[in-house]
Length: 281
Ligand code: C2E
Ligand code: MG
Ligand code: MG
Ligand code: MG
Image (cartoon, rainbow, N blue to C red; front, top):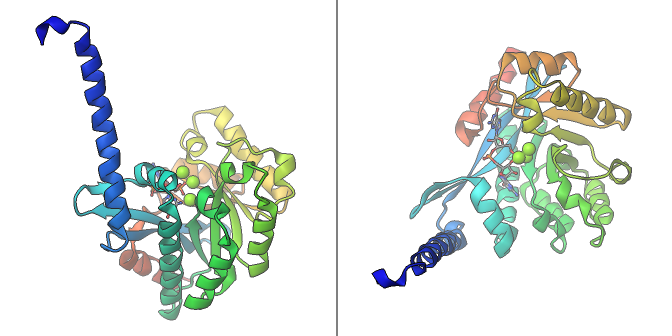
């Protein structure tokens, strides 16, 4: 063994590779069974309407507590779900669960005017996505205008799939459409203007340094101005301080999400949080 010299480096490298591959395989095998094992849950982050001075709804965020691996962050498993195609069934579960929750809150008297759901590009481009949305709305009885689908810029970049057709079908159904993490991708404005988008969500990376970095502040201001001129609304995400909130309010950003106002909460707590709106107004 000791005589192999340089071979050790290769061996170490290949052990590392094996570890990475093994982790991936274990994750994938567990992800495949996560729905039937009931390991997924949605948390809900309240969304604050600046002009109204109240919380108007929530964004559904997927949580996975794997029996074998513990809590895994969406940053890790969503990509894997996309690569393996599992996002199709997971995304459907998320959509149905979020719509059911919205109906249940409305039945309890929560003033809920929005349920925002993240949609992966893979899911969005998969056949009959608009039909699926229509089916789930019919099944759950949720009014279409309450559902908002959050798409990323990257999902809207490729041309070949008739993206405008899908967006148009979705607008026909009556759901709201938002672009998530706006400013991070490379969507051209000339292309965007042809899309029936209702809202831009300013990426957290601009919001976090909005008070220190004049460049990031300028980007946020430009996004708000651009949205205004294109008759879209703007939500800032990742607001963590009173200073950031004050800045965004002063720039007439319409809606705010972030730890400063509320972290994403399990359904029960989120329902109580939103329910308070009924009495405070
Ligand atoms: P996103 O849709 O941009 O969601 C916002 C993320 O920022 C969430 O992370 C949220 O917990 C976090 N966040 C909210 N406020 C703050 C804040 O003030 N400070 C900081 N540091 N973070 C904040 P999370 O839940 O880990 O989700 C990460 C991403 O995973 C999401 O980004 C979204 O792209 C994706 N994701 C989550 N759930 C789903 C889902 O059901 N389907 C799909 N396709 N993607 C999902
Ligand atoms: Mg989102
Ligand atoms: Mg985002
Ligand atoms: Mg994000």
